[in-house]
Length: 184
Ligand code: SAM
Image (cartoon, helix red, strand yellow):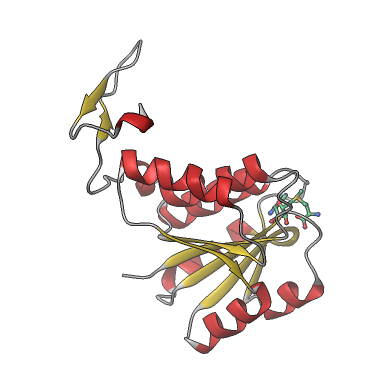
């Protein structure tokens, strides 16, 4: 099966923790299998993602402190394609079918601080989720949703300790395995 990883470029630990964590959680929940934090490690982001995986299951690869540019170069050498999400790119609707037909692995690059020219050039696709500035979290969610055509919202995760029972009102959670005390 084709691998989808998300590379977060430009994370600033002093201001981006929450948004970067949300990028990673959206990546996992919307069907990607890996998250790469470029150029910097952030233990608190790592812990938040690890806690979600521990409780809600699934296989999800997380790497931090990897050099973003080198990672992109080696991704392409290994026959993967790169999709860079930017409001300056081509409209998602104009390219998504072509990307869906391609079976190669995809590295999705999303920025925090200004994204250098390098990423626009190495990307196979610079894609806009509409041409207004908004959010990397929203852009990633919409991109993955368009790619999977909504199927990702039905994903089941292996080894989950908790599972939600859909409920019209209130919260119903099935405990499949007792969570560790420090996670309750
Ligand atoms: N000027 C930026 C751009 O190139 O899209 C917006 C910066 S925004 C704070 C941070 C990240 O959100 C961007 O690097 C991009 O990955 C994503 N983003 C924001 N708006 C987007 C849009 N309309 N389409 C695709 N990605 C978007």
